[in-house]
Length: 323
Image (cartoon, rainbow, N blue to C red; front, side):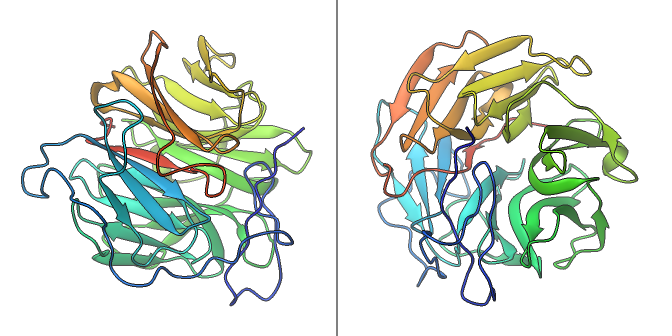
């Protein structure tokens, strides 16, 4: 049965709404608000200038925070925490220039941080939408997957071209109840996972990040965060199956599959540079697991600074896996 994460919108939303899967349901949810003040607690090793320390970002929707970890170590403690301008952070993405994009699910916007900064330097507004994740093409175009509208309408993808801070166009995902996550490959093609009106799960492809959606369906129980590895295979978290699946598109069935030790609900996924390892966030157990790739050996379990009271959602690595 689909796991339901309890989350809600900010007070400006007139009514409760719901995301299925790792999805929004109004009644028993926490009431997130904007984080107060620019706060990065603890020393951040590796400055924005040198970028010497490979780090892991972990979003926590319930506490309006992003924990920052050194990738080295075992069950390591956070080396910093971001809170400024966060309102229900869900999906995370790091660009090749080490900017961190944070989708504020409860804030209807995306905030962008330079590495090492405590406050965002730019905000992309996404009015009337519930943004799940922002991904950035090598051309600079930003794509924001919107779970639903704030009034409960179907999801979509907002497009920001030419450095715009407001949407310049929108991509239509056909017959959806909700849009979940998206990823770009190195041919500028955008892939979007979604939940269909017939209550099955789908994956569509926008060639060149534009135009009409084309079916790219794969066998998956419920789409979580996804990325393309260095071989341009799609690595896809399956929330319901508690697995990470690898697809050599257009093949619909996984060519490899990795299970978590806990059998929890995998939401976030991020590959390291050169796809040597990957991280997955488990919403059910409140931990983040690191596996070698493609061997699939469990390397690390991170629970310090996390937990079930404020479980992890999206994750991202810096430096990130290149498109």
